Amino acid sequence: MKLKKFLAICMTGLMLITSNITIMSSSIVMAEDTSSESETELETYTEGIFTYAYVDGGLALYSCDVGTLSVNLPDETNGRRIVAILDGAFYDCTKLEYVEMGKYVKTIGESAFQNCSSLKAIAIPDSVESIGRYAFASCTSLTELTLPKNLTEIPEGLCYGCYGLQSIEFPNKLKTIGSSAFYNCNLFDYAELPEGLESIGDYAFAFCYAITQAKMPSSVTSIGSASYYGCINITEFTVPKQIENLGTLTFLGCVNLAEYDVEEGNPTYTAQDGVLYKDNQETLYAYPCGKSDTSFTIPEGVVTVYDAAFFSAPNLKEINFPSTLKYIGAGAFEYCTELTQIDLPEGLEILYENAFADCTRLTQVNLPESLKGMGNYVFYACDSLKELTIPKNCKTIGDYAFGYTDGTETDENGNYIPVKISGFKKHGAVNITGILLIILGIIILVAIIMILIKLIRKTQMTAEEQEEIKQAEIKEEDEKYVKILEDLEKDEDK
Image 1 (tube, rainbow, N blue to C red):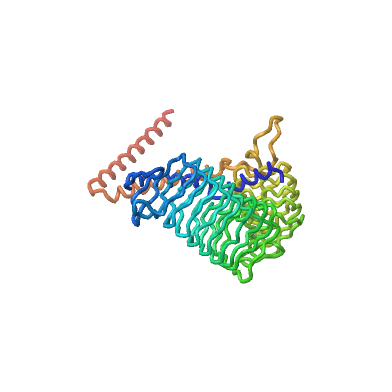
Image 2 (cartoon, rainbow, N blue to C red):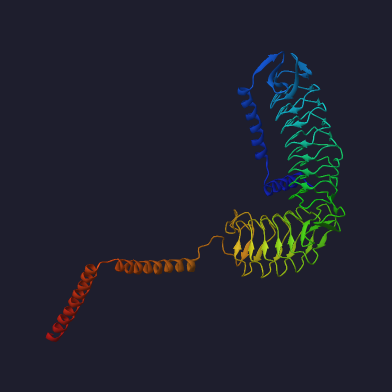
């Protein structure tokens, strides 16, 4: 795959996911804020290159001289054990290359070693029971990491952006891997995940390009969204038997993934010919985009093609749809660049956003009369699609559904770009009939209100007021009668 296309696919995938780098950045700022709070609350003292703080159970390393190259943290000092490394203790120590901790350390704080870009090795004792978020984030020179045997949770962003990290050894007691824990790490030597692991967070191994397998223990019950996003060298994946909700877009951008399988006993998912289904095969959940087949027939009984199910399946030239199909999810066939013709079945009701976006060779699309609506960008950037007939029952058409523009703009030569839509009315056009009906309704409503006001006013009048009004109405009628008689006399005189 060309680099340009792959980058475009990655950008599209990022827009489909709720979790993003901005959220991660805000989390890092929060970690730094925690460190500044401790500065005002803890009593500290300096000894050599270290500053310590008094905490329950002993001392905590508060900070270190940023010019330090190597750290051998003592077990204790001044008769007190060093039991913790506080938030941001070594933050931005860009010259630090080696760290060995004392044997009594139990906790490592948030962002404790973040941005230590020269750090090559760190020895973590088995006494450590918890590590804070982003503790080793952006330690780009770190090549291997052995986690302590008593650690049960790998926190969010633990090694985020450690692109030099090639080897990781997981503890046997591990239960949870947090979101973005190993985002953009190489991990050539990818140790097998331990039995007993229960959950893997969003983006946990995203863009770990060197990972070739994603084998999981049967104990895993939860996998987050895009957890292996962009892992281009993974070729197969087996869904563990206890998984009931596989994360959204888990293997988005895994361009060489050629086969899905499901562990026996899984109540939700099934696999057929390497394609993943759920809900008793009513939902086609994921088609492996590395599959070499050029055509595919979606089985009868499938009601929904899930979001990004066929995202960037570059070999598919032909798709046959079942008569049972009702919904095609967001980005379901996006970047299927070899598709040239789509014949959607009668019974289909909704095309969600980006459903066929970036299908650059698509020249013909036949939409069924049953279609009720299309989301934003459904056929966006389908450069070869020149004409499309909208069914009369289709009441909703999303913004930029047919191209780079809303369907009315022209290029430098005056040509509409990129498609001419037969029967298309611009999204958000004024409905004159509807406006007239609304105005008429307002007039009738005002008249009814005026009548009600008069009736209510009348019931609240005293007898004297009612008599006065009655006499006024009689006088008004008399005046009208006299006027009529005068007009008649004038006519007779003429």
